[in-house]
Image (cartoon, rainbow over all chains, first blue to last red; front, side, top):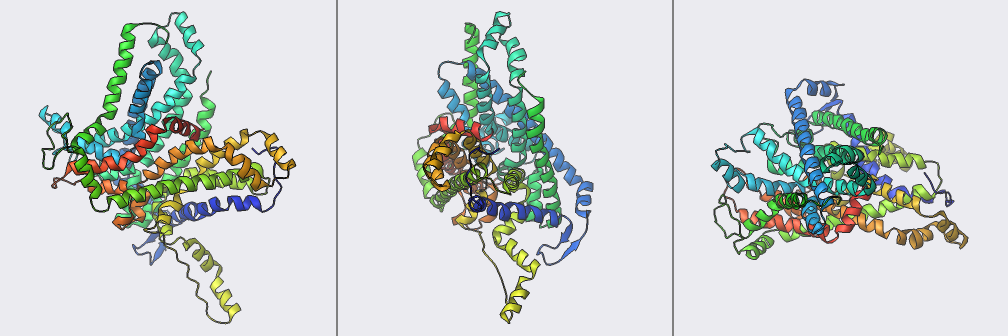
Length: 294
Length: 305
């Protein structure tokens, strides 16, 4: 779309776009192109020699059990994080929408975790759940749970899911609350007059009307769990124990920087690009068309 | 509210109170622990503060490099905010108020970057940061410009472009200021500006830049403020990028600093200081969100339209 009234200038628009396009070219397109290029080569750690190997890097990945483990870890992690953050955000929004007194206090209490950096969120939670220092961990151990996220993979996964979901509750809360407040009161009242109690109104009126918000949030939460939680994992578990929290993004980082395996890291980058493209297309196409306020 | 039911009111407020307590628990506990004297038992359950909060905050503050790291985070957050808003405003102005041949191309080039977060191009982006002129060097090598220049000049010419962004504020800020989201937000806003304003400005003889600075920019302040809150937090909380491009402790950000103070294994930990550091690192963005709550919510919702 463009304005009906426009300015006539041949060069000015290019000058205006210049800074943005220059940064995009240098820091986005060039590196992305390079990742694609390098995914077809086998290079030594110093980049001195490169041998064209075709799709071998991809083949290596697709036969490596480690990569499948990482895919599984990512799916479990993002699935659980999305589910936990969406449900908590939704429940809190439903109640906050109904509350009259102290709304600002409740809103503030629920919104602030958005401002906490993922790595700091990880620090706060590992402190509560650290097997030797953590006080919640102390309680769990006193109750007879053999709690140790440093050695037990499932415990480590629980810990990073809790930290990641906790941070994302705020976002979901804000959007669900905005969605709830946009529902016309007359619809809710009509349902009430027809004899629907709070539970039935929620199930048959509110949830269907919120479906566009919900689907939008599902995609946003998955993207968040995939890409924005690197800090939590890096600071808290370092992908361990024994790869139990080694997500795809974390693996690209460790393969590229710690193992210096450029080809494998680039091939993984390319696969991740396809995942992001799929998620973006989903967000812009599928969701806008299939879900509507009917 | 439709029905008056006391049990329902109680449920509503009960659930909100429980939810708020659960959500606030980690920071409450961080404050409690940060107020404990050195050497107190960390796995005991404390419920009330220990009275050493300010002492520990002061110790954390005076700890090596923390002031500097907080300053770095501030520079990075403000730089990213101002930079993103500035270049996005200009781009959005160009694609809504001008007709030119590559308008749609530019639009799509910006759109595609939504699909290229740093996380999917980690290693090559780092390489570019190590030498931001590498792409131009590659083009020079490809076109054999050195030989052409050598032939023109009559002697050997060696072109070596190098500009490292590692351990610099430019490096922390510049690669992050391109923004599809912000550009689309301003584009969306410009499309709602009445056509008559631009018509009137043109009749009065204002050129495009005058229209931009005198009319469009003042009208955009609300969107800019809302977006600034979100971008400040985005900039402050960056993790992967500062981790990659800073090697010296004086150039890193406070979030990385907190992650580095996390004790590993059973090392002798000073949890009260670690938590005091985490509180100092979190205070600025949390203050921004809570004090500017209205703008924050608007920015969050606008940015996703």
